[in-house]
Image (cartoon, rainbow over all chains, first blue to last red):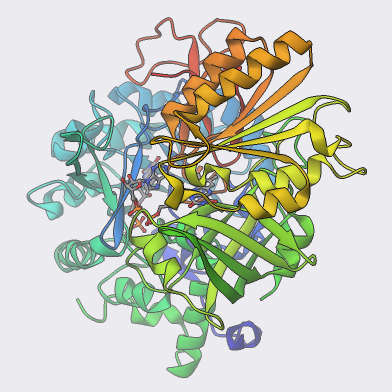
Length: 311
Length: 306
Ligand SMILES: Cc1cc2nc3c(=O)[nH]c(=O)nc-3n(C[C@H](O)[C@H](O)[C@H](O)COP(=O)(O)OP(=O)(O)OC[C@H]3O[C@@H](n4cnc5c(N)ncnc54)[C@H](O)[C@@H]3O)c2cc1C
Ligand SMILES: Cc1cc2nc3c(=O)[nH]c(=O)nc-3n(C[C@H](O)[C@H](O)[C@H](O)COP(=O)(O)O)c2cc1C
Ligand code: FES
């Protein structure tokens, strides 16, 4: 594998996402790598630019009944329902593990009430080994809040403002694509004091079991992810970058290095790999290797030179 | 490709061999053999997995490096040969399995495994009954072989009974393999075109009545359609026989990172352990385990059927 050797050369892969400096642009997306224990047996997590945790809530959540997932053309639907261990157990058991892996940790948090975002941030920002926060204001699976927060610019601003008061660490707001105007939402987040936005979360979608004449997912609707959504994600990132020139983390259907390069060219400073982790457990590593090889081939001094060249 | 670092599953208790390494590799197709209507055995060259996989565990298979179909598919191991060949017994039910059936000698497929927990072995001199509904028979050759292995299961050949449920005689497979192994093999067909006429669970009930009369200590294993598993688990309760089930679920990742393969299980202490999805702090006596890492093998008593 040629990229293994090219990794030894010294192209500068580091990127800057607002105040957050990462040694490379490749992160794993929230909810697609759990808390790292499983993936750490496939590759050393410290190869990643950063590790983004599954969304953490104040109380543990057991998640939705089956069916929670379904494959669709070049993509998948999920309705996990934010199953997670809750902030206490995260601090006690999961964070210490990630700390040992020596990978920058971005904790993704989700809540049903605006004040809970602040409470969560306060609880977490005291802990050692956290490099930043990602605010999930966009999960489409939780009825009370998730979607409403992410589709209401006033709510987004308010959440970020309250979180901002509780921490000095970098804050990234993860936007829902299920809105008429993504730029409005990004602007709302930046106005609240967000250091960057990450987009996109999954697209609200559904599937029907024709035989049984009912929806496949137990919650009727779920979120669409995977290669199928990449073109829409690209368009949204492009729009936000053109309008605001703010730091962006690009997410949506990234399967290989070329996809990641596309994301960077339309304005993403860094990227997150989601569904690809299920298809190929080593996808983040292969993407990183591909980026390195690309930078070398193109004789780039810094990979980050391509950020926004197509915007 | 290189083997990856060992996957030690923290969530597993003592019964699994939780220290197995997990490998990702391109495996060469050695043979594709039709064994019955729409049913095949695919032989793959995969020494690393063949040397470590245990009965009950599974692998994720992706047969084309394209994005549609996107996700890998989980398969049990029917048989391990010469410590390097994996035989997969499978039935064509959709696009992924159709594509798998079109692979030919010399093609390669991507494998990820071994994954999941293993079946456990009863103490010696038990009667073991293994019930396979259709292609649910898949994990039971490997298990039967392990059960009668003097170093592993330590059971006598005549104490291992395989019951296969099939739609009709065109869907009966692998009988010769089991007979060669020397274990007892019986078939139930829905239409009576071969063996016992009726459901395999009816055939099982017959056996359970006999073993009760003979006061044999018995261990049950089952794999197959959900309705069959439910019925088997009811029988195991009625006859007070321990029973392990291999549960089927949609598995996007197969190694515990997506939380997609939820299986509803009972909480032991009957106290709510977690909040319900709506977070009302309700009186739940259940929670979700993950079929891929907490299973696919579960104790029948755990499962909540609804
Ligand atoms: C641990 C484990 C071991 C397995 N071992 C074997 C094996 O040894 N041999 C074998 O033939 N099959 C096995 N299966 C089932 C096998 O994975 C599915 O049949 C396969 O994924 C179907 O893929 P497909 O693309 O052909 O069908 P699809 O087009 O994906 O689906 C066809 C139909 O089957 C349903 N379906 C698909 N996958 C599942 C699933 N996992 N559970 C329930 N319904 C499903 C779909 O909803 C649809 O109705 C196993 C499953 C698990 C979880
Ligand atoms: C199974 C699954 C679980 C997810 N869980 C979360 C989550 O807990 N929090 C979150 O912010 N995003 C979650 N996401 C969204 C992903 O982080 C990502 O935004 C989305 O999947 C699009 O990227 P992809 O196409 O590369 O997967 C989840 C996605 C999937 C597929
Ligand atoms: S299949 Fe992803 S957690 Fe089980």
